[in-house]
Length: 332
Image (tube, rainbow, N blue to C red; front, side):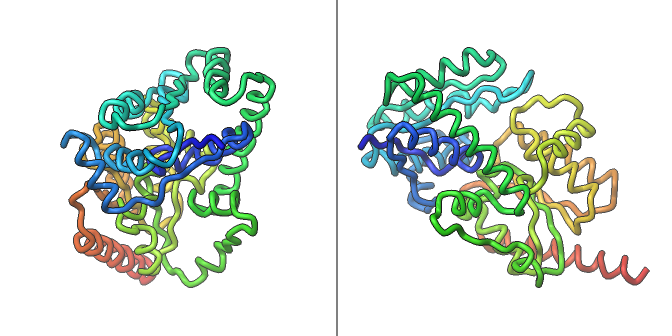
């Protein structure tokens, strides 16, 4: 059976169920790279220039780990997912970048995705992708429809059940399901902390040094952007910046603006060192937090040199501040 490799990095957390469903409907086996390891990060760093941001270095490491395990590698070039909103240059040039730094890579399926070009162009690109495996347009159309249904169900599951992408993916593709009971899991947690940022930063346990797990261990219930309805996030983003300029701006500005106005005990922003769009977007969230003076806010900047000790110290100090503030408000 033909195998298509999918790196477990960058947009994996947003689109993996859709991608996997599409290929499986065409009779193709998908091969997913393992969770991020130190060896992957080191191998990715060895191929990329130093100025490249950590998420792209990690993606390169994941792609390298799949070289001998698949016949094709799926690396789409996602240019825009909304009107007058464009993606970061690292997503636009990702397929060409991987071709340049991994010459031994199998054939890359570099589908171009730009919704501003209209539905006709998007459908043509979907059919072009499907032709690698079948010449039957009806089969490709059916696979695309099934994939879209899976994508909608995936996001609805995260929103309605309060699941992270990793938990939702496990539940969708596991025969028995993971059976996560969020109410039971959160019953013993005394604080509510929102973590905002791109999914490839807040859900990759190696990159963020198990951030969500550490917060839960310290007694905090963790909320993320995927646990809020997309329309609500869009409204919060519009209130803060007007029309969006970046495709995935809602992950940072929308979620940050929303959680700063609801009853959470603190907000933690997560960005990658060297990411221009992230630094601008997170600064807007910081400024709003400073204006409101209602909810504590902290920004964590991650790179390949980030150590456990420094991160844990900052988390402990932040939660101590949140608890002290909560006690003072209770006394008043």
